[in-house]
Image (cartoon, rainbow, N blue to C red; front, side, top):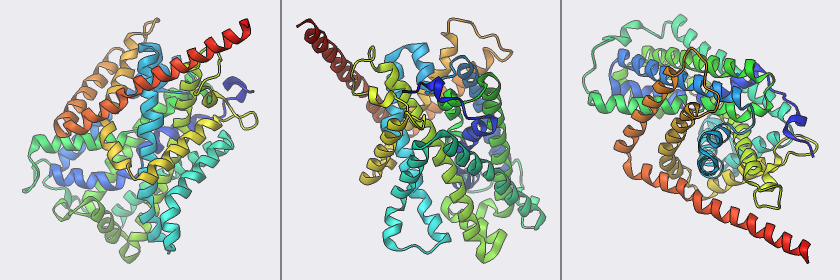
Length: 451
């Protein structure tokens, strides 16, 4: 049986940075900026919200970079939380990531991709119904059979997004469809905009969700070459790339389609495509959406099994037989956490079958923000003090930003937020049952050996 170290570190700077950009630049880049612009009613406010979220995100990226360099193992936040707060808190995060949140995200994205594929290709009805499952199975298969293949596909998809989105911005400018006058008045808010406080709060939450996923590079740190060099570039470089893309694309959107004509997020995609490319606009924008969503799905399917793998290895007691131990093994031939990949794919398919992913996402977002903040707090609890120029400013900025976001979520959606926290806390009795099962197995084994 190959260990993680024996499996080799196969991912370089480009692949690790693609993990950061890939999850952040997904479906949200086409749907969220339009709603934000309409609600805020001001180009200046739109830019300010993006820049403010970029500052918070960059602060978080610096924190996660330090943690990833200190603990360059597969598992990301699970590993960091275990170091800072112990196994119980870390297990709750792993429970949320592996069983609840990420399978729901994967199911939602796979379903969201289908209408855009239909815009590109005529599909029979049976294939439309089964396509989300086929997408999940294909991604699971790539990750099962090898990190080199899956990381290569993931890197290609996610780096291809950058020139494609950049091309949209450039074409909007050189074709004459974008006009600076449509951004005016730059500072004043347009009539009919939402109330200022609510608009800023909603836009900040939307921006956070769009940036979401920048932390995923920590989950695959165990398979990254030269972590002290690669991970800082991946985290900070990836966040800067995402910030630039969101700012450029958002202003290009508004410069092509005036805010007052935006009716809804989904209608806006068609409006923008029609304005830039005429009748072919819907198909061209659909191709861009499919590319961005598949890149994000590829990151999820690579990163999340590494959390399950790390959790299973740590929670299994002294190598004894355990319900979790099977997920803490690498495939003897492919060197991948194959059973963890199967679990992630299976749970995502189950969520897809019951159609509960939209409710799961609404319930779990608040808890995700709390876990990110707790992960940053780990820097204050490590044995060896942090010696960086940005410390302690970066974690303080990130904690304040996360706290404000959590408060906004509680005010905006109190019951889903609290119910999500309850779902996460349900992992405690689950862990108790698993640990109890381990201890029972150990006692039985000891009694057998004595007899």
